[in-house]
Length: 215
Length: 202
Image 1 (cartoon, helix red, strand yellow):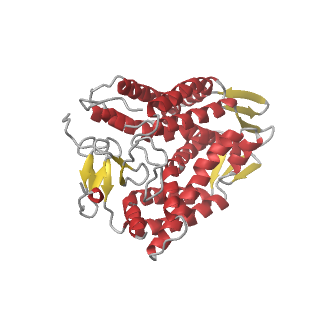
Image 2: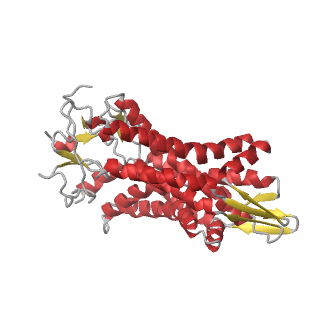
Image 3: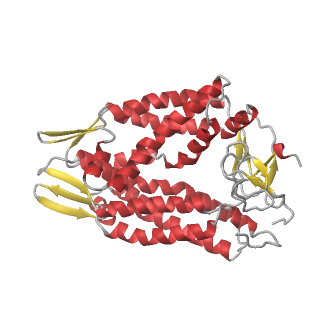
């Protein structure tokens, strides 16, 4: 990649994260008191502590992902019979009952998307820390994917919300949310924050020949 | 260098010269391909109209019956927030809070906040803390997840359809239209126009 390309950082300019106004950087880049003159957001040349924060959130999400999948997400009581379902047993139920499109939706949204997102973020973090020069444009695309897909994992939480609202017929049939739902909501929220705290500009900073690590 | 005519890519930091676009045009970063800015026809008027429509639909979606569940002689009628209240009663207040925020409060914040910003701009006024409000709306936009909720409804209905009959209510139709209205509003908005207007009014 051409090293002489002008960036805001090299011209001691800061692009406001909120309204994208270009501002002159204060003498010290870490001066936290600088705010955007147009919208009032705090100015940062790069998202603060992006790599450390994103790592912390990714590791937390990996940990919370385990109880989210092991613990039951719903308890169904119907005609005196009680049954607990995890996310995977719900998917298997749909496959067995022949509704494989629904099984696919739940599997992709609840199992595949959170894992894909966590592995992509891990890969991006490691590549930034190793100052990789490998395909920065494609890695930026991967980042855009992690940003866009995370919200769809909320599907299962909404399914549980609607089920507990509708199936409340006492001894005839009742559905209650299980502890897995709390952890699952946790995974979704933490991974969304993780994607937000990662700064894709770090992918491009390392393309500079005289790149120095900035905190 | 003249800063007013420059824009930095928010994904790779490359500086670009801002040039006027034809209506409907999109400017992309030369290096990473991120969208830098767009030009929409009548952006603010369209967004204002869609926001007013959205607010009406939001009220209908939250007031009228949403889904009704009928098993033998028993009938359970619900509104949009019934499930949230039920989760709260089951001790799942974290989950209830997350659902309340993402499916009710954040969409409401976006709709009312956009009205607060767009109506004064329409009449060339500048009320209290306008830029702060617009910044907050933009910041919390990703947390409104109504379109994901819609997929949740489909899955839940399929899941229960073998067990009992489910009757869709007026609120469900309002909710479905609202998702399209919100999507159209997001596609029509060029936030840079709002920021430029706010700047020139100071």
